[in-house]
Amino acid sequence: MRYAAAYVLATLAGNTNPDVATISKILGSVGVDCDNTKAQKVIDACKGKNIDQIIEEGTKKLSSLPTGGAAVAASGSAAPAAAADAKKGAAKEEPKKEEKKKEESDEEGDDMGFGLFD
Image (cartoon, rainbow, N blue to C red; front, side, top):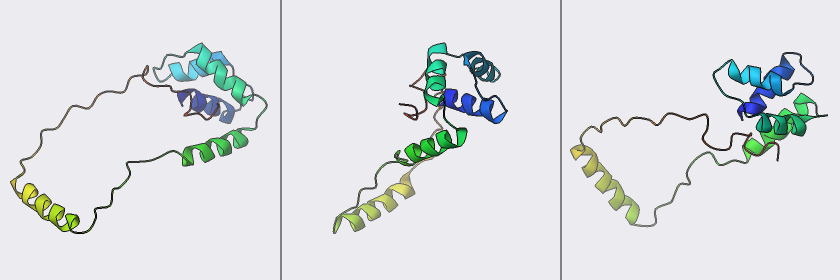
């Protein structure tokens, strides 16, 4: 996603044909190393397209992504029993210790734009 964002930033700034060096400079300005192969893949996928067209296509693809876990409906009498158990547990529950959040790594996951350019 960061490569796509850098491409869009470059075009919005007036660069009609961003290259790998431009994307690398934008990513480097926020402390992100640029993988030239990934940057070139984004550039190739966007070549000849209007930025508005790219954003529209990407928005359609993003809207189809799941945004959370599916809710499971409780059946019949299980729901009241579960609610009663939850109330009992809430009264006895001690404050939870705050867990340390894992820092996001620039190297984790495929960050090409969630399939926007596939």
